[in-house]
Amino acid sequence: MNTGNYKWYVVGMLWCVSFFNYADRQAIFSLFPILEKEMHLTPLELGLLGSAFAWVYGLCAPFAGHIVDCVRRKTAIMGGLYVWSSIAVATSLSRSFRQLFAFMAAEGLGETFYYPASMSMLSDYHGRRTRSRAMGIHQTSVYVGTVGGGFFAGLIGQYYGWRWSFAFFGTMAILLGLILTRFLREPARGAADAQDLGMSGGMAVPTRMPILEFLKIIWGTPTALILMVAFMCANFVALVLLSWMPKFMFDQFGLSLAMAGLSATIFAQVASMIGSPLGGWFADLLRKRTLAGRMLVQAGGVFCGAPFVFLCGQAQSILWAVLALTGWGLFKGFYDSNIFAATFDVIPPEARGTAVGFMNMVGWLGGGAAAPVVIGYIAARSSLGRAISLASFVYVAAGLVLLTGIVMFTRRDVARLELRVKAAMGRAP
Image (cartoon, rainbow, N blue to C red; front, top):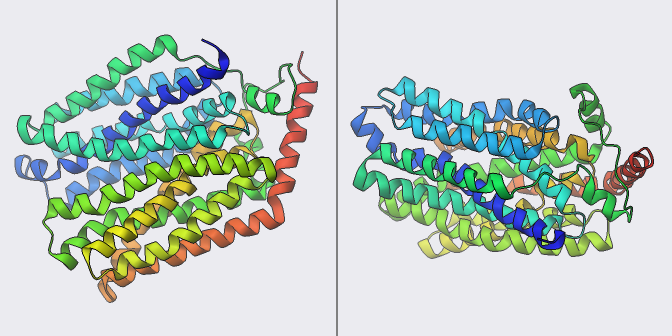
């Protein structure tokens, strides 16, 4: 199996793991009606089940990322897969709300290791020429897992009970892990960056970077801070639409709950599946011409997506709502495909897991956690449609922040990282 092809096989293997990562976490939402009836849960308790995962996932993300930078990425990926899958199976044994809550929180802890480890690993198989494409293709697993997890969990739960949904996803993921353990290989840290610079030797990459040193790197790399702020804004908008568009379509157009939920998600997710690989391909091409190529694609994604976000809240027919969601989803994919690829243009190989962890924390706690509450507050004092439309200005803010980074900092920060890599290669034995 030659190296040129194997790096794409790695994308495929990690795609499968990521699918279950998102399918497992999405399953609970499709089972709310069954859990409400069988276990007599209140709406507040149902909401807390989702919050348990989100808060643990976000709070633990930086620590998980730091651990990933200290161990083999394969160990973190496989270990996390076995842990969260075993927890999913164990969830089927729950007999009370407290047990369900504990399992949801534990699953967040298990899953928080995956993204830092997988993104770090992909960055060492794919350098500047293919990194955005690889991560863009991998990103499609998020959309497929979100839709597939919700659909199949609901289908299994409808015919066999909610317990079998968790047992099915957990068991299938464990079987996947047993297969991938044989084929997934750990790359050398910094291998792709060294190859980009035309250096055939090894790199003197530290096996562990203290958190304080990492924070100094982040503070001294304005581009990284800008990317985190933009990610927080983008996550805010995404959670607004994913959380509130089902209710908007239910209220505005009189759709059934099932059709409102499906219409509000399926078109945007499918469009993102198209936009993510396209955005990755375009970013890799643009990166050859300018050091800020990936951020330019991200800025274009949020600027082009903003009008569609505005239209989502102003739609007067189902057709216009679907078209607006599709347009938003397409350009969301352009942004999503470069979230971590752009970050890795300015973050050294030995700190990339930690960087992904910090970005996940900012995105989930700073953006995702605030969005549903803020829009609910505005909607209560105005209207839901107007509140959704106002989220478009958050996208514009993200674009302006990215443009500031492109003009003022990115080229300097990328060049500084390349000098750091060359110095590390000079210290290699």
